[in-house]
Picture 1: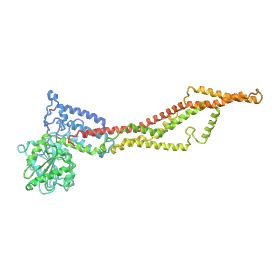
Picture 2: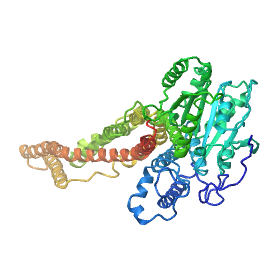
Picture 3: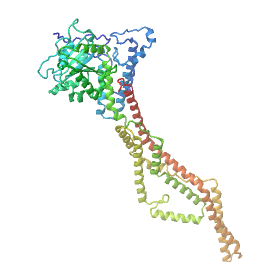
Picture 4: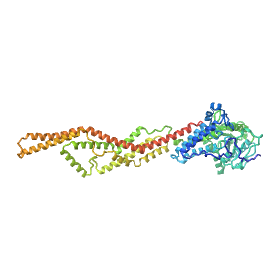
Length: 630
């Protein structure tokens, strides 16, 4: 038995990569939780470095161990860069291919933009995938880590030994036989991968010596796991941990437990999206008589199909299903040949990672996509309705009417008869004594009630526009939109009150039209006629003047009739300017209220919607560039 521990720090055949998978210099890659701006700059620098590394490669699949460092110019002219942009595997330079790299960048951007809106638990799986992608990227691209998993008594350790060609993993009737993962590496340079799996040096082995082993498996790192249904909880925890880190899995089932509910519900069904890196092996077929092996294998395929796992049949990508006997060696050679081809393709790490990205995106779908439809934006109609409600709450229409009344009142003061002006002055002072506002005509109690109603209207306007903006959004983003609206609405009624005073009724007297002086002079003339006629009549009564009743009466009558007639004519002429003056006051207050509402409510809500669309675009990039067909 060959039991050589792989603790050497051998070279992987890749420039600048150590066996432990760590780089001595340079920034640590894969940090997805740093600052957004710094991360974007680091990503651009990393992308430029990756592009320079790609230009030094020659696209001849499978990828060579040592690509030429300076390809001839003719290769560049033939689209070397374009070929690597379409390649999704882990490149020898330690970078992922174009489409997979784009998906990882989009997922990293998605997590960064969503961290302040979603809780850490929701983003935990996506963060784990990014961390594992960065960790795997730093390790050997020439090795493929394949775990052998199975239930108690399925014969996985026997199959592990058969593939290695030597007795490495202990077998027997004692259960559980395997208590810790055991590794077998066909080539040097896998120490970093095994350190990542937490497999100590004493459990690292070599297969049969050269000349007695299949060289097609060079680059394979085979892991024998404990039983996934072991009675020991620590064994099951080790299985779950290692399965999230390996590049591929060989599930070993036996004729008795191939339909075990624990296997299908806990492992195969959740990992259905990882079909391309999955082998399902029906072991112990030597115990089945006649055609029973084919019947059991067909039933196993049926169960896998019910689990949602695609089967690699007829040239389609999917899980590999075959029957063998690890004890007699029947079918082991076929599995070894498939593994050799699988390892030499060197696409398992990227396939595993792509499937992990798909799974993370599927988990995040409820928080980025709602009802499968595009949520509406904050349209012009919602904005106009919000502005109208704020204008109603601030009393823009009432201010306009008050301004119009004030303009007409000033016209009446200037053009009215002195007797009517005296009467209006008396009425105004009487109203002030009763606590009535001469402009609004309301008592203080009515004003307080109107203020409470205005606050309720503001709150209703904010709730309505927030609901309109959040309609169709996923729950976390709808909540974020509503919270941004509520934060902006804090203090909005008080600010609107200040605006109502500042931008409401203009200070000072309203402007006077050009005809007012003439009207005032004419009204003064009518008053003088009344006074002159009255004095003339009094003089005749006391005998100072010669009695002539008709002339003074006519003069007085002209003043008495002409004054009110002139006041009426002025009031008619003042309606148009007064209306325009009131409309200007209403417009100013509406614009001021709209600007306040826009700055405090609409702009934060729009910014929140824009942020959602930005992360939605990143989510589409994560899912739209899928290379696993999901």
